[in-house]
Image (cartoon, rainbow, N blue to C red; front, side, top):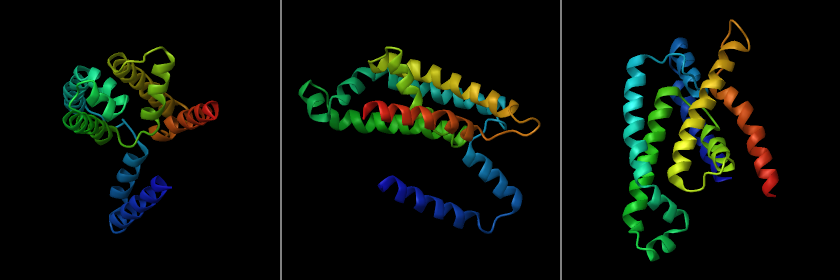
Length: 180
């Protein structure tokens, strides 16, 4: 319920912010909120690659610490990890990585929820391999979804986030059902 309430509040804030803008600005904002890589330029790609390599490398370097934190902060501390310093550093780095990708492509939903499950199903359990496999599988999923978004209804382009949601929602519901 908390997620629904926060989402409703955020939606209200967005609607208030967009209320007095021009039609073109509203269209661009709406397209970004639906996710798209249509406006990508090589300059943006270069900056994103640099950012992803730096933050992704840091997370891969800290993979053992992430493995320990996955056991719980008390257990990680018992195994010698300074959890009070490691956890905020890792959360901040992962948040910056997510922020950079969202700033570049907009809200491309369900990639972050579905892809790690796919990587785990492929046998990746420890975070070093899981992070790399998730990055590669996520990139592949976004590229395939973008191709579908551009070709399913020519000459119109579907929102990338809608295509990933059409893939992700049934997958996620099936995962939830299998756990129950």
